[in-house]
View 1 (tube, protein in one colour):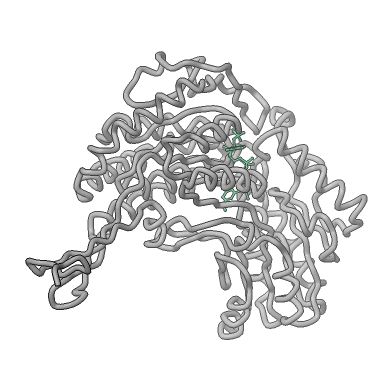
View 2 (spheres, rainbow, N blue to C red):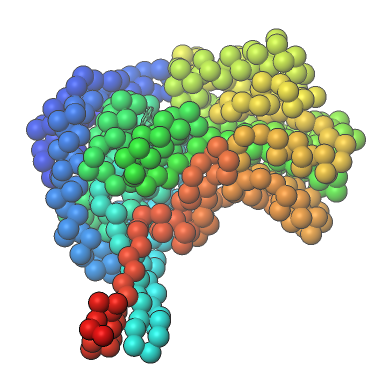
Length: 500
Ligand code: NDP
């Protein structure tokens, strides 16, 4: 058992965890078998205030620490993350229900990569401003200044990765953070806080508070907070952005999607099916960028469905620590209810053709896992744009196949949505793929692949899928504000108030 302690409470400012006030408790569960893992103490308003004050107190010294020294500390955290990869992956598997084969190769790895990237970036001039001669006697220089106390609020699908994607540029830029994990996946947060501490991060620079939406809302409206970086649903993102905007705080919002994947008429069938499966069943479909609307040329649908059914046998549910398992349960009972209701709606009301899957648990599951939040990977065929399962984000392993007649038609239909997170194209003629992708309204696009999101690549949604970007050089700019200084070099300045 990984968790011997009954309670986990807020971590902030170097204060003893036992000093924190609690406002009740919530229980975390293992999604694969519905067994309780541990009880988490909800941070009271007093505790949250202390965390914010600890961050505020740490800010002057941390922001004045030279970037290269900040980077050294963050690099030590990267080394610890990599050293403890499997231990952290076990925590993530227990908490999220994702197979160990996935958490041990993706979740911590991609988080550590981003921390390394931003540490390197600030150590190599990423925070440098610009300077220019305005006229012979005057110059202008700019600097990228940290914002102050920033808040990170995470979703439950990539807990430690999200925590790292937010804290890495935040801390590298010289800010301090108060982070709230999702109440559904809180376990990683204290491990990460301890790693930062062990790496030498001064007290108060990274703080964790626990709780549900009300804790997030309290943080978002806190007067001492300069920025909120949020990942979650569109509806929550609107509330967060509204509150933060009301307080003139900076906001980054990484929200939901209903992303299209266009299979071009010349696409290699095997490749198209592989990409479609990655875009729908990886992480049991609980990925914001999922390509759930799969547009297939009408004349290709039969062979596409046949090849897809053939490959569905390689989706393997089972013991999450078995190396062969590549498909886990959904993250929570609440989410299981939502996803199975969508599948039922697709069958009974949308009347889409169920190619495979459904609301039952996978047949191969052993008896001891049957209480978990499992669903089968599901594919609906002959879908139309007006169906609810095609229009709304399900956030589960549910693919919709949409036959189309021509690429122009597919592009128009792909863009007919208020969301614009991701999009992709699969085809042999890469020139055609490029021109098609250029017409798709989305912030993250892929050609002949799906899902890879390296540290160097800025990612963020268009339309209602979000505001701003994470990662890449642009991702650092989201954590700084600009200061411009005009220097007059002339010893005396003529003004309109000079003597005539
Ligand atoms: P939610 O919007 O339900 O929750 C996200 C976080 O916000 C949680 O920590 C939640 O707390 C908190 N929260 C809830 N209400 C408020 C509020 N009023 N003010 C401040 N914080 C609040 O999203 P999910 O956790 O269900 O995550 C799934 C969603 O996230 C999907 O839509 C998915 O597409 C999106 N997502 C987007 C990504 C992107 O990069 N674009 C990446 C990953 C996911 P609690 O849950 O503890 O109640």
